Length: 243
Image (tube, rainbow, N blue to C red):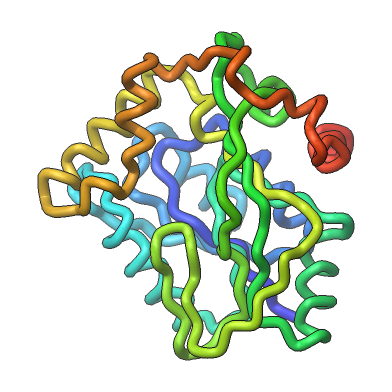
């Protein structure tokens, strides 16, 4: 079974290797769109034989345009399943991603629903890999970003749309560490997203960048969930122990 982990990246050199190694280990093939990085990310992908292309959005972080381009390539690749993520986003299940998807597919499911957490910087010194240094955050809603592929496949923000959806809420979690990156990187992302808003991207897409800027991308630890004490501790432990 061809399980494709795919995403788009911009200046992710400090994070991309850990993510790629993780998803390869979990049984995924890789395809990346580089959004004209200038920090060596694209060169790293090429040097390490990661399937990738470059795509220019004129220095704007426009989710709709990037997802449309990513979707176009997915329709050319035609994988069996798609794992949509990011270089700072990790899925953790009781078994590997490949085994989890194969089991779901055998049972006739076409999409996995996953409980999601957002890790936050609560004043820690910036270090990598992110998952070994940030242990506080918030709980998000469930997302559908792992899906069987067919010709009706569409990407819509944090969800994938299919004509025939049969969802399975799978034991496990997804953790997004994007808000843990250094403040200067967050400011650059906000500038690029602001340009996309100015060009017509809906203002609610990526609004967390604005809320992050209000606290200078540093949150109060007392108001966060302690991952060491949450109900999903075993998954956080697995991420930290196996990688």
